[in-house]
Image (cartoon, rainbow, N blue to C red):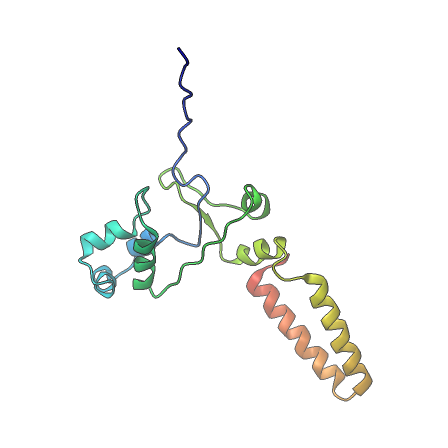
Length: 159
């Protein structure tokens, strides 16, 4: 008689990461919970269950809940270990969902090379060469670029 292999149970949300707050947390912090539920054409008790991440939630239910908050849902599949090796993760014992701070999203996308940094560098060098050839207004143009880059770094953090 052969023994059956026991399948190791997976933890809920083991590989689930949410940017900023989950919809359940947004609902908990909201001042007008019933108004948000009304946007989704649900009564509050059903809507709060809808926004709760559970093992049996459907993707359409989650999208309906996000829609009530005027949000869209983006799903990105990444190789295992990419997120935790790239950005800091916030997690708590009472909430199994792992959170990523908004400013770390740019770092994560940069790590995945969604934007080819070499191409951007080449384009900047090309533009600088074009402006140097014209030489009119180069200093003011460089000041505008420096201002843009400083705002960008303040908003998204350093890579």
